[in-house]
Structures are given as C-alpha cells and as structure tokens.
Image 1 (cartoon, rainbow, N blue to C red):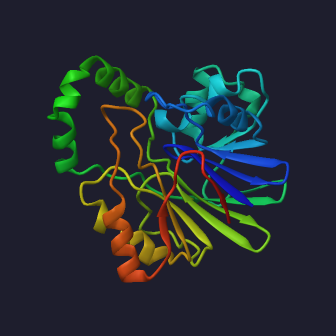
Image 2 (image 1 turned 120 degrees about the vertical axis):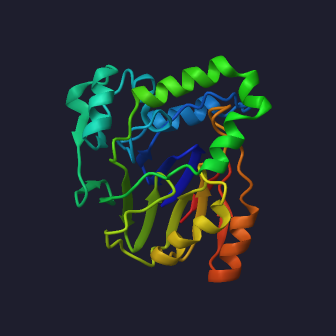
Image 3 (image 1 turned 60 degrees about the vertical axis):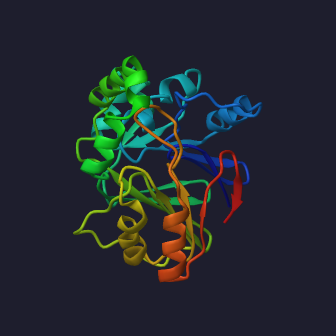
Length: 259
C-alpha cells in the first residue's frame, strides 16, 4: 500500500490497480510542476472518493475532476447535498455515517464521528490584519463566500483504512470528538497541521490519544491564500519526537510513501 499527498488534505491510497482518494482538491494557489496533469489523472483513476467534511477545500473540485467519470463519493449528508446542488451525479453519491464500513478492493474503510478544528483568536487576528490579506481582499472575500456555500455542519469524519495487516488513520481536520472511542496504535496517522496558532502543543493531545506508530503531516500548505498559509511543522515534529519518540515527518507534494 502506498500513500501520496496531493495538496491540502488530499490523499491517494493505492494497492495494485486500486486507488482510493480522500478529499480531492485543486488548490487556488499556483503550483510550478510539470507533474500537475499526471497527478490530476491520478485523482481521476480513483475507484472511490471519501470525504472527511464539506468545506470547499475538501469537495469543491470534485465535479470538475470527475466530470466524465462515474466515481462513487462517500460522504455525510451535508456534503452530499452540496455536491448534488453543484451538479455531481446523485446516483454517484453515497451517504455514510459514523460506524459505516466500506470495502474497496483490498481496502476496508471505517468512518468515525470527529470534529473540525476550532480556529483560535490569535490566528484569526494574524490572518485578517496581515498586509497579505489586505492586498488580496477580493480573493479573500471570494474564499469567504465559498466557506458559507460549503458548510461543514458538524459532520466531520475520521477514517481508519485497513489493508492486509496495515492500518492507516486519516484526520480531515485537527480535532477529534471527546466521546468517541477511536482505535489506537495504527501503523500510521495522517494529521492535518493547520488552523491554530498553538499547533505545536495543541496537536499533541491527538497523538497521545491515538498512539500511532508513525505520523505524517498534511494540510500544512498554502493552498488557498490569503486565508491559508505555509505552516512551519518543525516545532510540532520536535515536540512529538521528544515526548513520544514516534517517527514524524511532513509530507511533500506528490511524494509517494510506502506504508
């Protein structure tokens, strides 16, 4: 099984000819890469898509990526309705809930209720009052409008993917539900590091709770400026290594990881 990080929270898990996509997204930020079309094709080769939640940076691109494909999308009620309104074929939308399990090739994918990260005030102030934000006000306003059109509605999911004797856990946002018993000691946890000014310490609680054997960091990139930013992951990596002695690294765009 291999994992490829595409951008933001977008992941591809592959096993032989079977590809499963999570939160496919084409970023608004320009990427200087001659591999972009090749990676877009990788999205299009997916046998199925799983959505963690309904924000625009997780589902906006689905109708354009799969315009001429009949690819099933598994998501909760709100993003399914949003995608239906955006023109995604209703017959390809599969509403799922916490506890549901789907088999795609040799992948077994189980959904758990989760929560979206709560942006803290220092980060909001830093973003809104930055020179970068004011220099791109029209773009910021357009992105804010997308946030309203693509609601999360308290429907964030956490996925565990089983492939043979390997387990991979995928968080779509940097938070978990306090009353859910998540499985622990997975071979790998994909953890999004974006949305908090105190992320280096804040995210440690999820490592402590899930006890993964390995951590891969995603959602650290600047995919929709000026609301996003490139995140310095070095402090979190240092804290994880010191406190838990768990291998932890930042995913690189297009990098294929053997799991």
